[in-house]
Amino acid sequence: MNKPVSVDSSSKDFKEWLAAIRRDIHKHPETAFKEKRTSDLVAKLLTEWGLKVHRGFAKTGVVATLQGTGGEGRSIGLRADLDALFIEEKNTFSHKSCHQGVMHACGHDGHTAMLLGAIRVLVGNPNFAGKVHFIFQPAEESEGGGRVMIEEGLFEKFPCDAVYALHNAPGLPAGFFAIRPGPMMAAGDTWEVSFTGTGGHGAMPHNGTDPTMAAGSFVNSISSIVARNISSSDSAVLSIGYIQGGDYNSPNIIPANVVVRGTARSFTPENRDMLERRLGTLSTQIAAAHDCKAELTFTRRYPPLVNHKKETAIAAQAAVKVAGSENVEDEFDPIGGSEDFAFMLEATPGAYMLIGNGEGAFVHTDTYDFNDDILTIGTRFWVSLVETELNGKVL
Ligand SMILES: [Zn+2]
Ligand SMILES: [Zn+2]
View 1 (cartoon, rainbow, N blue to C red):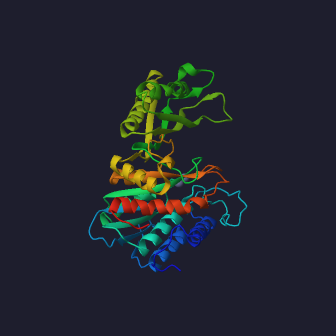
View 2: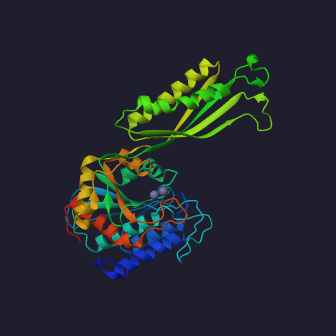
View 3: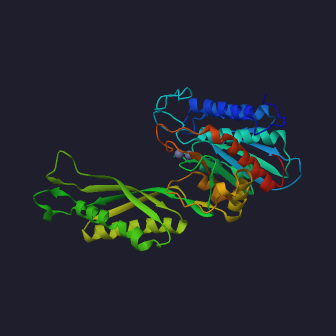
């Protein structure tokens, strides 16, 4: 059944095969760098289809290459993510997670199935010039598996002229495609400011310095960063998620240290730098005004996801071919979430496409499920992208 013969990607059999794979992965979710079973499943299929499989990038990453029959040409990379999240699934259907507290709540089961579907079609009819590298990455959610693959030499071993990813989007109509050139998803960074003074007796604050005053003033001031330092045509977010100082049982003691932690979201490298710089200036200067000290730790987690113009147009064109122009939005609004694929787009040109998952629960919620009805069109998008990029006719 899995031999490299020509496959009809619009047949009922193919759709059922895709859904069976997707549900099998959904039922056996695995989190960052532990995607052993999923990685084995992918590698087994690729091997059955005659591809040479490279394993081991970022522990569980799988990469394979398909050379087209049309001779030399460009090399492109198609990425799918393998990992699940730490969420207890509340769904009751038969493919519900069998791993307690772990769930495919972001649809990476569907992403993996769609790319496998595309590979199966392409292997049966590799009618294009150049090569396609299929990249199955671990740990998209929070551990930066894509970054680790790059650090371990992904693009040296598998050079790509362009790289693409496809992610489902609940709320967008099923099978609708959305993309935009330029910044599409935010940088997701965390920051921490530690305010230090002397603290002291709550009844005699004049004998010491009070970091709580500095922290309070700082908390009230950070909204000025987005309001006054970011252009009105851009957007950015600074939010505080944690404040800690003193001991609950000692309200009569002024603490010597107060810690404020938060998240920073921005859509361009320049604004990212601006948020970091202004958090540092405000915290240290406000602390100084209170005879205290402040130290900022700004941890850069995921960079902004910035789509490259030419590749965005190619991806949109590929989507129009399978879904019609009325089902493709190529000037979609940027999204405040973050995505590990941003590292790949820093390393090489490319684009990140969304595919509507239809109505239903949002990603990262305990009742979410990937919509099996979009598996076929997602698969056809990938094939169409290969045709568009590499001058082929596969479908
Ligand atoms: Zn996610
Ligand atoms: Zn995701």
